[in-house]
Length: 79
Image (cartoon, rainbow, N blue to C red):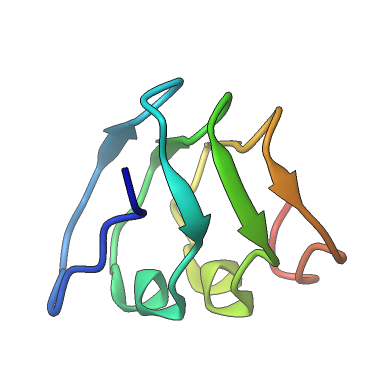
């Protein structure tokens, strides 16, 4: 299953896509989400880098991408 690619997202509070067979890269479009609190994408096959736009999520409390094929460094806004 390819990683979702929505065209317009405004508010997502909780996304739990753990171990569902996602592959591909994380689209920078995720940065358009205005209010992400909890995101779990662990145990998939997501590659590439984490989009820097995610660093703008000021309400983020949980960000889990464990056990994927991600590379690079985290944006200074994350964590």
